[in-house]
Image (cartoon, rainbow, N blue to C red; front, side):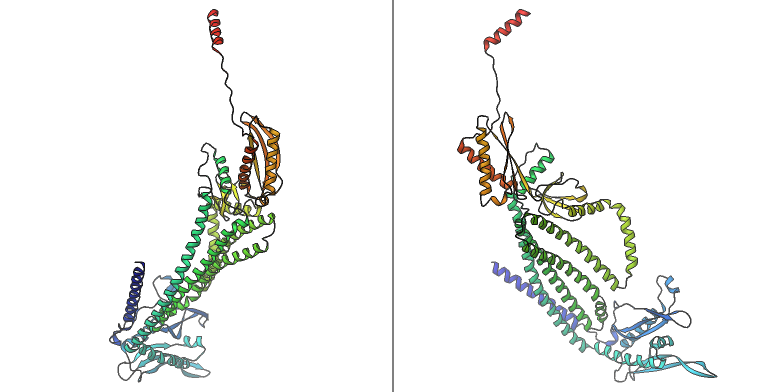
Length: 615
């Protein structure tokens, strides 16, 4: 059944793919205008790039802009800059009006049609008188460029070459007119040829092939992305299962009558039983995090390639047809901005992988260094998390500013405005500022690090994540508590550098107290000499002796210094061994005792008679 279902889905996807391909081919190849005269030129997303140059003789500035046909620049025209039109919101500048008029003239010629064999570009000159020395000379002031043929096209005005046009090119009016003619003639012939039904049909088949190739490449990339996504899901599930395994070994209930702080303290102790702050114990988690970051980098790279494939394919198809070529040219102008955005994304993902790689190599070199290194390694892990977030913010900011500069948007006013805005926002976000300041102090002072077991009063557990703004703690119930750094005023760190077992056992009053103390010391010595537990005990145990005598028994206190976070595991093993040796030696555990005294009936009768005699 699964095989049939898979084949059905495969053939269904294949039919959908073929249908979409044929539809695209039909739309691009067969919907050809029946007559060139009926072709309508859709508006293209092209911008008039107006440029200003030095002042002319009259004291005003000269601006110039390109005239384009099907997105291709033919020539540039100039005009004196006028500022009055800018006061009206919907008016056009003179240079824009001139560009639009000339482009409309070119498209009008294409709509009317012409014979490319007899197409002629002619000039019409209007002269003006100018005094040169003592003589008056007739000089050409402007030249009209006119297109015509011997059959379909009457004389059609295309453009006019003015002295301002000649001035910006450094040529005479006649020379510039000849240059425009050399550009206009082949451009019109090419534009008409590209609008012929047979040519459009060939372009349709070509665009269909490009589309099919793009779809095939997209399917391959989608396949690899799904594989990486499945791998990412497995890594996340392994993290969740590891967390579940840790939590299943912990007690399910806590004393309900304890205060909030005592409950938090017990939560810390129980959580520490299975969350290992040591570097060796954290290595699987760090390894999974490295794999996740690498997976995110590969997936991001494939997503970028996927996007680029479609953009290139679409731009390629748009560039084939004259009607959509301006869109392709417009897309080309945005490649730099798009490359900056995609490059910034890749650099952010790659920086996380690079930080993980450097941390891994550093830990491998220092793996045999004793406990002081382990604290330093924990700090390095914490700093790497903070550094990733900080680098992401910095790189994203640089990418945005770079993209704005490539779009010719002035950055200085934006930065000034952002500074004023941030200053204004700072009054409303004082808690955020306090979070960042306190988070910085926590890192610099090494109050705690990722993997430490802490109690901050309102919450307790293992530090799972932290940055400059907040700290996340995971408790024994799997509940994740997020505490703003500004709310952390007192930190109880139970796993920094070393830990201690403050162990108290109560024996019965009838027990031999000297023997009990000797047995407690013997068990501690056995654990320190044990190959499995000896590494967890840092110093010989300190048997303090009898700490209290009460109705519950005689309390004996012992201190055992252990590796950070291992005090609860060592304490469990110590209790187990101590119970076994107490049972062997007949040492009873203290039991609460209470004595009740009863008077006999004769005494009660005498007391009652005495009271009656008195009355």
